[in-house]
Length: 538
Image (cartoon, rainbow, N blue to C red; front, side, top):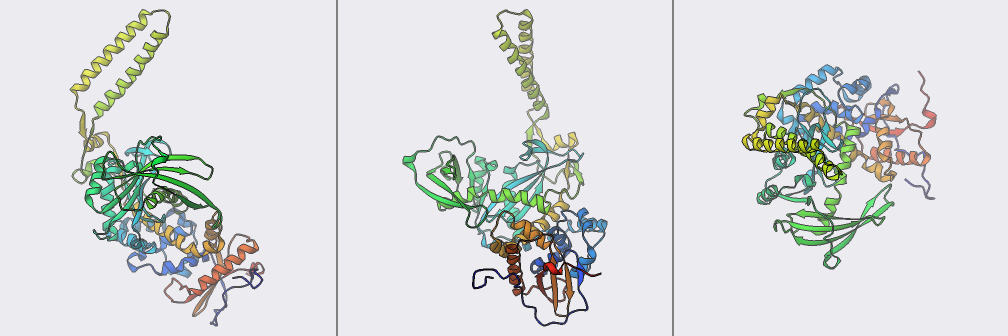
């Protein structure tokens, strides 16, 4: 709120209504959590079991073990009775995760926070978490490490605004292309999305498979936007350009904008004319240019929208980092495993290259490399060597015998049988799945809660840091009969301008008349402690 001369009034806060105060103020840890009270009081009864974990995550406890650092006495004054025992919390998590409706109810509540029903475009991408335990579980490609590793796949679906709305956990028994359509159908079922509602799915080139593209087109439920895998630049022709546009990208604030130029050529994809191809030349503010190819089966969609959706995938990629750092999405939660022997008849088996063939191919590759080196040495040497000739003859004979053996062995085998033989296990992820949905709810609550502050603060470099510190601040609380007055004591020593902005934000919050989440229906009145209030008499 600005004064007539344009300066902010540092002492403006919400006027305190008349109410009966209690005898004294009570010092309370975590008082800032009440800034999320609007969302916490809206929790449906069917997911009330998750309220304590939701509060803990918003306060920075990324797993059950870390919740021991929270002050339950203070929290119970604000939220009523909580489960203090870590063992009891773990036990309850094990019970709740076995009730299938719990997961669905959490997902559906989360979808109301982000208004999923207003969305038609979604980002799909797997996030891989390396597994460091001792159990033998399936390996897969880990992008973070740049090598194959024991991993857990978490397939995420985000809205086009970058809000997570669904996730699924699995190992690498099925690859992304095999999981894709099944997961989309599970997403529909969990969020009760009607079959006649078409969804546009934006996904990376890991989905690239002609048979899958055909299956998606024939389903009539999904529109796909993805990169063309293996596209090589050099096909751009200025004379065939169909359009161009400028896309802004905000950096540090709403006035700090970078402009990216996009030029594109539209054509039917030569490999499958059911797909449209957009050859795109993208130029950044420094003048650096890339050339890529985008594929989509949504031929009626505006071309600029297709390009913008594809190039905005960084929203989802950045969110993985944010979910990991601040909401603990990479926490394992449980190290329980199940043997693949017990999964016979439960999962659909498939044929894969046999272990014997893989081993022979590996040995063949080693022999071929040895032979190449000896042949090169023979070619470069001025003197002929009988020892080298004998080695070339020996290696050639071994390779010939190995090729004969390759034709005699079975080239394929049951993947399930191979995993059972090798003693591979599968992580039981039901506990992690339930807790991870609570974490994406916490993430979305935080993002929705910060919006008014973000608009006032207008500094995208540290707005989340400042706001998180405010929501995790201690404070003094006066529990009146009708009003609960909360004075926040953040750890930050604010600059005058920042303090004014926070005062203005708290004024906006007070005007919304938030309610105490303890069931008392009392209104909350927030204020920021002044410097002279930083003395507490004991």
